[in-house]
Image 1 (cartoon, rainbow, N blue to C red):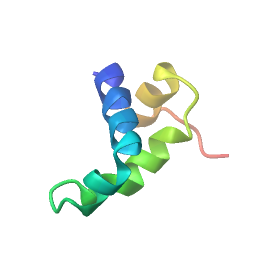
Image 2 (image 1 turned 180 degrees about the horizontal axis):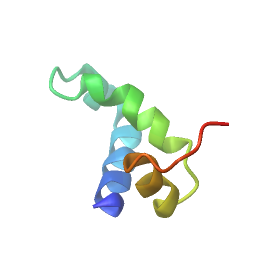
Image 3 (image 1 turned 90 degrees about the vertical axis):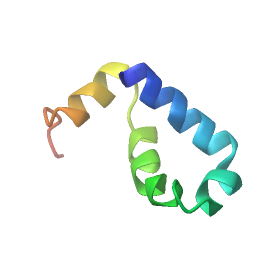
Image 4 (image 1 turned 135 degrees about the vertical axis):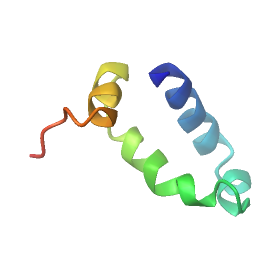
Amino acid sequence: MTHHLMDYVNDYMNEYQRYFNASNTKKHAPYVLRILFEDDAESVASMLHGDAQLE
């Protein structure tokens, strides 16, 4: 699942104008940006499961 999410994030960023301007995907932007801060699939999975520690 994490890899699918990361693929979606890449698609979203590659087609940012299209996704951001679409009413059904516009609200995804903050989540997409948050996932971009993660280094790899393991850190994304950790964040999704609430295992990531705040620094």
